[in-house]
Amino acid sequence: MIIIQHITTLWSKYSRGMPDAVKRNAVPHKLLLPDAPQPLPHIFAHKVIAEELNDFQLKQTTLFPEPAQQYWSFQFQQQADQLEILFTFSWSEHGAPDRGSYSRLLFSLKQNQTGVFSINGRFSSYDDQYYALHSVNLGFVDRFQDNLFLTQTPEHNVDLRAPLF
Image (spheres, rainbow, N blue to C red):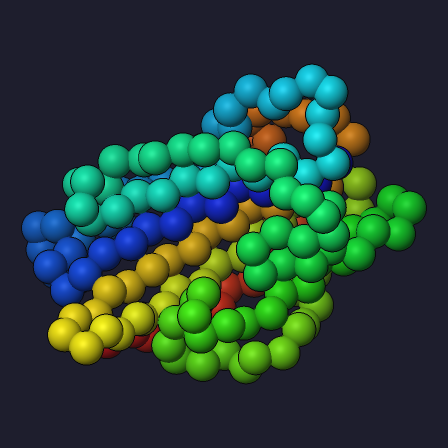
C-alpha cells in the first residue's frame, strides 16, 4: 500500500513578512492521517491545503488515485518489496524557478519505509504573484497506521525548495 500525505501552503506577498509569516510558517509538515476506508485502496492520499485567504486553516480531503501508478507529479514503479518514486517538474504545477522538466528518481522505499519530498514555487499573473510550498510524506507499507508520519523517521528526504524572492 502507498500512503501519501500532501500538504500545500499557498500565500501572497502579504504573508511573506511579519506578522502573517508566523501563521504561514506554523502550518505543519506532517499530521495524523484520517481513517482509511475498508477495503484499503492501493493508494491512499491525504490532501491538505492551507491558504492565506482562510488564515492558513487546514482544509483536508482524502483521495484514492487511479491509475495506481501515479499521483500528482509522482510516478510509482513497484517491484515486489520495493517502490521506486519518480518525480516530474512542471512550471504549471510547481512554479518558478525551473528545476528541470524531466522525470527523475527521487528515492526507492522498501516495505514499511517512508520518505519526504519538498518543493516550493512562485507563480505570476498579469497583476500579482503568489507562492506555494508542497510538503509530501510518502510511505510504502503493509498495513495502515494513522500516525505513520508522526512516529516513523523517514529513510529519505529530498528537498527541492529554492529562494523565491
